[in-house]
Length: 157
Image (cartoon, rainbow, N blue to C red):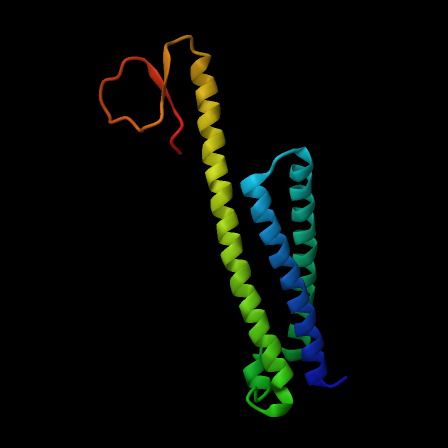
């Protein structure tokens, strides 16, 4: 198999895996924001498992790429402006696009997880406060530092 064909096969496989990761990340984002039941939580666990498998396969492809190309980049191996290398150039552009979209979606998912963690910690703290047998009030706004009478249950996250 020619070097160009090996490059195309490798990049196509990577593009397919990154596209799968992007679709999974988008679905996961929806579940992180709006999970309704335990089935959706188990779906999240399955998605994490699928992501791990895809990442393992991407690592294998990257190792294969390094064996075939060494440390050279595509620009060093091919004249990407040449007509015969248009398919490689297209695959490289598609990979870059999908990678950028995946990075953005993962950042959004990470923010949703951080928010959820803060909320859970706030609720756990509220449950602890309720168990202290002291007066607890409800407050939606953050209080200014200073004297307060009793503890307040503050849900601002």
